[in-house]
Amino acid sequence: METPIIFADNIHKRFISGVHALRGASLSVSQGEVVVIIGPSGSGKSTLLRMFNMLETPDSGTLIIDEMNLTTPHFNPNKLRSEVGMVFQQFNLFPHKNTMDNVTLAIRLVRKMSKGQAEDTAKILLEKVGLGDKLAAYPSHLSGGQQQRVAIARALAMKPKIMLFDEPTSALDPEMIGEVLDVMRNLAADGMTMVVVTHEMGFAREAADRIVFMDEGIIIEENAPREFFNNPAHERLKQFLNQLL
Amino acid sequence: METGGKIRTAMQGSLSSRLLGNILFALVIIGVGTLIFASSRRIEYVWRWERVPDYIISSVRENFNARANGILISDGDAVYIIKSDGKKELVSEKAKLLMSEGSQVLVGDLVAVNKSLRLGPLTKGLLITLEISFFSIIIAVFIGIITGLMRISPVYVFRKLALTYVEIVRGTPLLVQIFILYFFFGKIFNMGQFASGVAALAIFTGAYIAEIVRAGIQSVHKGQTEAARSLGLNYIQTMQHIILPQALRRTLPPMAGQFISLIKDSSLVSVIAITDLTKAGREVISATFSTFEVWFTVAAMYLILTSSMSYLISRFELHMAKAD
Ligand SMILES: Nc1ncnc2c1ncn2[C@@H]1O[C@H](COP(=O)(O)OP(=O)(O)OP(=O)(O)O)[C@@H](O)[C@H]1O
Ligand SMILES: [Mg+2]
View 1: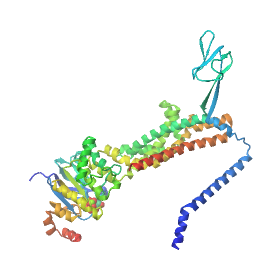
View 2: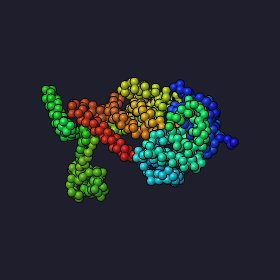
View 3: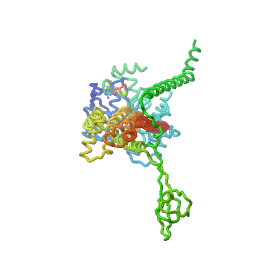
View 4: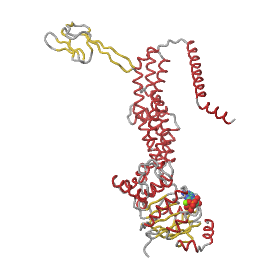
């Protein structure tokens, strides 16, 4: 088997508040794989996902991403972050910048791309997420679904090797969930490596290569979608799936 | 019932309450004014308002007499006399002829005048106040942003240094700070009155601006930093392009308040012999004894400065709001 692009082993994280959010979580993701993480609230899904671009750092365990060992002392996170895109529940667009500038900012500052080149890149990506006509709009003038699509384009502009999604549709009105999931499905079909925390079981079933179930800071079950839904092994997962129905 | 209520609130919200309010306001002002005026009649004081304009701006007339016999000429600005030996004698670089060009003049004749406007002492003081305030505000904003950033820096020693500075400045009176800056630091760093005054005001205001900046930065949602950092921006880029632009916009109203305070507080530098508006006022009074008129005028001049400042800031805020 080829080396996974994300290799997390026995990760522990205890917050200053005392909450023991991760208690030995392990997860490997191969290049091009789409992994969906599900689990009850507070089970540590976000904490684990945020480890993958060092918005959180592990207390102990091994974490190797794209051959970079993140647990090396004084590891500089900026190199990693420019290769790992992240999409947040609350979009987190920059409100003082229009759509175009939101997308071009990082490629100009971090990739040192020229303005013209950056804008060409942005146009192509915004076209791809269906917002080619919103280049000059400020976030406050966009719907939630549109904002999230800009946020995806913004992350993609960096040409990341991995895309992380933390409940990308949870803050959206129901009628806008579809448009964001469509963009994500296209991305998955294009072969992007994706780790997605979501409650959208439909998306998980169709788009995921593998679904993992997290509970109390560890991953207790993982499987291909069909097996995962049809033959859950652990009692906790059975309960969780029953609650969803 | 409901309609009645609606009509009443509509009326309160519009014409009647406002008109009534304005009438009451005028009455109160007139009443208080009359009271003060009546009381002031009982003290012996000769009001000389007619002199006040001269303290603000005065017109001076300069007379020029001929210093030679000859023929008067002018090239528009300068005035000359052509003497009998053909040599030109300058009367004035800039003056208006009182006689027609070509007239024969004798020594001692009044031939030209120059009327010019001269800034009165109060206006000169106002300009000094403006100058001090201008430099102090610029330096204070600079100090404030740096210190504000230090207050939330991940580096402990920066936080500690910034906090100590803020605490010292906010815990001591400005007047004492001005004295210390002028008499102690002014001496050891060889700073004059003006520099000491500007430094004192900038250091004082900088501490308050630092707290405003800190609060502004902390009011920007954590998600903004996370989004910027997750795109690979470093700490400085995140601050410069994402956090500060949003934070500073929010700090504009409280900062404007600090600028206005600074303009008013600048009157304290008159204690170290800077001839600002306040000191100019005192000087005019000691020469003329027009105590009341001068202080009222000085107050009005400060009010013009501070209200211009509010106006500028509100225009700027409007401009910023349009940018979204
Ligand atoms: N910065 C933090 N400081 C302290 N505790 C935290 C912090 N972030 C998360 N936690 C705690 O860690 C635990 C796991 O949080 P996490 O956000 O990873 O859960 P989650 O599975 O994403 O839940 P949800 O579905 O509600 O998003 C929770 O108990 C949470 O309160
Ligand atoms: Mg979460």
